[in-house]
Length: 325
Length: 201
Image 1 (cartoon, each protein chain N blue to C red):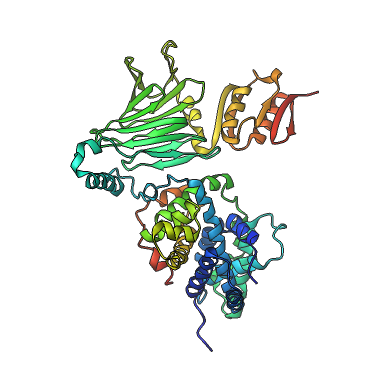
Image 2: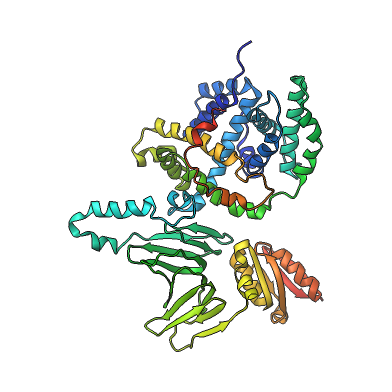
């Protein structure tokens, strides 16, 4: 009796076949060789199916986008330390243009873009130990230098868990609003046509609009800042529950506390695409409270219909909430 | 026969994500002379040759049951009856039907998991996979961009597939249930070391 082929040997051959097929169509001779190899042992077919499934599964990696940087996902212990990437970035830049002077280059680091798709919540671990959570359909640009850590919030909402680095302040820019933080947790939301909302969960953030005066925001404070200087800043204290519900998107939830139905529908639109929920004009001012799965507008609609005695209709991809006839 | 592409897609979406849990379940049994990899490979084979999969409403449970059938056959064939296996056979149904990991949450984690899986590949291999799968180039385009022979790209793809299968198939959640600890366990500083040892079992 021959020695039984090991599963590892089989896996090796199966992966080679999957890689070969990924390169180009098999020649008839190769196809026959594959068929006869597969027929030799049930496990071969299984290993081959698994390798091909792996190739298919990896197609989703395209959603990581062109700015995918493996270094962001190699982080190990949450110890803030200069990573190899930053080191290489600086080292490489210095080496490339030594004659121009390192100082010039160090103050102009490469910008890294990150974005999340609709419905996606992304967690980014940065080189300095800071963690950024991107809410659905959001985009940021990260520029770290030896002087400062700059993040530009281009659209959407992000939560920043800022790692302490006394030598380099962490600054978030959202429109004309700048936020300077150290060892702080805070979220910033920027949406078309709406004021920038800043909510501080822990620590202190220095807020500044344009060239205006500096304002300290402490934990459990919410600020709404319009880009238009003529609109006064609005700062209010919020309780723990407000902060928690404001951040429930981290768990994929939307939490409302006496929110208007049309506002709630807008929130669902952020995760599920525009107009996923259509509220009858007569119902817009109804208030709703509770926690709902952000990606389940249907469940939300049913819950609302049940509590208010309404009905739900479907039209195309949209869910409509209407009064009973 | 080679399985059709749709089956590979179904396996990728509905089955592969449960492989760590299945391995965990199999790994808890001390079965003399039984190789978990053998059982997993054969389970994939049985799913690959099914004429239809539309009737499978709970792929996770189906995957577990398939592996269980293979296990029982192997035990019978080998004429060994490990006490542990018998004592725990009835638990299979319970475990595989237990609240499956929240598919929604899984979906959100999938992309991150792939990002991490690619990140832990050996450097050259990683470049190849980023070009081929993240940037969506063909093997030929990848070869041109990285200045490699096409045959080298193919070899990196083959080697990378095994690394990725090991990384993504492995139980990375500890012994707990469907907890979010998986994310944190991925933060352990174990990057390249386990890659090459995986295939020697």
